[in-house]
Length: 371
Length: 171
View 1 (cartoon, chains in turn blue, green):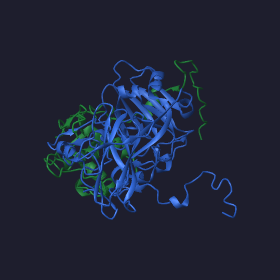
View 2: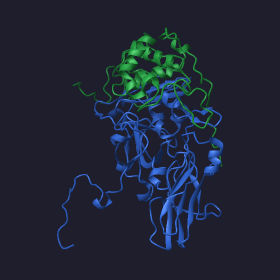
View 3: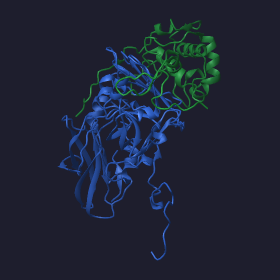
View 4: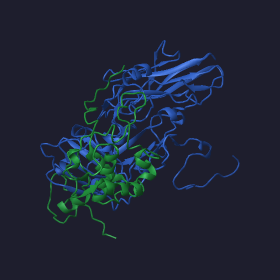
């Protein structure tokens, strides 16, 4: 360059290079009501494990409310000794913790095959990973004093859906957070500003955003979002309820659908793996449709209930190849094949699709979703 | 505009363990927030509504998205699907899938109509719930529902759910 560049504060809150304008969230095709919809994270364009705040996936049931934190209150009541109302300033005075965790919508995946043109954003984009800061829910519950029969906590949002889910008390006392910050800054409005529940490893819908009320009870509240929705229909017509944990899953993000290899030669296969039950212990990669597998290298840190970046070297010989990844977590659980998963759950289970993803590399280097 | 509460400054001002943060919530304050209705009907407000009144509410506030007679439109179908859950094309509606009638009241009360949530009175909510249950053949045309009768409406798929987390089930 032979001229001065832009001055500082251009702009005051920084934004990506204009050359990265294509790295954006995209609306999921289904749904005709924009305030009851979802948008996806561009996994194929990201590096490492942290999702930039502006690219965190969205799933709203009644739009994004605008909430003044000075006016926001959290009510904690029900089976407690001392019902309490907290202002944000109160909550931010409690001893706080910071942890890195993924958040995944239980609708991430579709059982039925997506088109060959699908990208990793289309197939897996309802997952993001952030550093979350807040106060442990256990600390706040202790402030009110749990009564002996406390077994479930109803969490309610301040959005127009007044979103409600029942949280088992064991989870509330284990690692649940009342989160007010994400990747160093206060929550984005789309992520629940000024306060959200955060349940590591559990389906995203339970991490209720814009949290305004916690009610402790002795049984689940059987809300619409845990009966009519977020229940998993099985082939025999029964439905699984309270399927909270996001089981181990992985996806190759390079090469992935919609990308094109320039020609034969060296490429580094790269992807993401995670488990809602703890740490992952290994990822295997196949370039021949699962006939043979070899271990991928895991990028430290490998954290509990967090994305892990994996990589494996690959020399492409310009022949068609089918790329797959398969993760194992610390419980010994191995990510299932699509055939195994569909064989048990059928095609109408809707939620918790954690099957192995396959990408087809064609002879011309183009990469397609294997259907 | 209300004066912003200074953290820690409560009306009672008494020190409370362990951190002394937050303010005691009075029963009146709690009542203003406590809108949930449990499966057994706990939390249902006093009120009553008839199928015929509910038909009026439905036509005005619901049919635009859920279709005439609950057949579906922009939003989910509310009617039909009985016997479809074990087929290749299951249709999950209030009648075919929802396990509790009380959940319908809770959901309508908190989140519907979509363009004006929490705008219906308790009587209007009972009425439109009664109408949707009538469309599903679960209450008669002359039904009037209230906080005592709604929890007694038996839903066809009441026993259709298994609630122990069965995963992992496929390897």
